[in-house]
Amino acid sequence: MTEVSSLTGRLLVATPALSDPNFDRAVVLLLDHDEEGSLGVVLNRPTPVGVADILEGWGDLAGAPGVVFQGGPVSLDSALGVAVVPGEEGTPSGIRFRTSRVDPVGFRRVHGAIGLVDLEAPPELLSPALGSLRIFAGYSGWGPGQLETELADGAWYVVESEPGDVSSPDPERLWRAVLRRQRSELAMVATYPDDPSLN
Figure 1 (cartoon, rainbow, N blue to C red):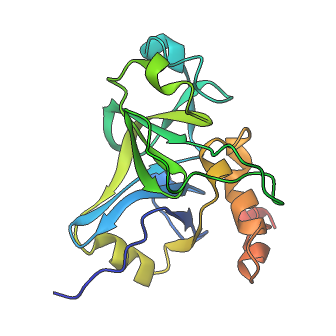
Figure 2: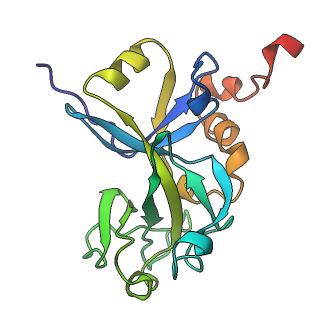
């Protein structure tokens, strides 16, 4: 079996050619990717359901908009918390993220400053450490080799994530924003019309 190069922490950005309606213009943060498969959450699918309506104590910690996001078509009755744990020192770019400090209880680092939050933990334990939090109902999953096949078929662009992607205040525009910031021909894809037949 060939070894899979991990894409954990990167973004899958749906290409205009991707026909699955679950992933139309989706931006997926990969939380796990290895030879056993892949798991991620769609960052740009807000629902009308408030976090406070389903998870007591977590509503005040969720970034705007304070709603639950549909993380994908799998296990819609389960919730995942994804957060950014910022550092305390400023840098020329304005933010420096923890890399060597001990993670707070109830937080498991996935990539850089991004990690998973144990939603069974008391929210007050984590609140001092969290820079932003987003709650997802369900997730996106791929079996062994399935994502690699989709990548080979041109269904996804793979790009670097930024900590701000998790808590984008304007998730409906995240697909275009992520593509626009690329320093390649991908930036042009951001101008692709919603319905090319009207062009």
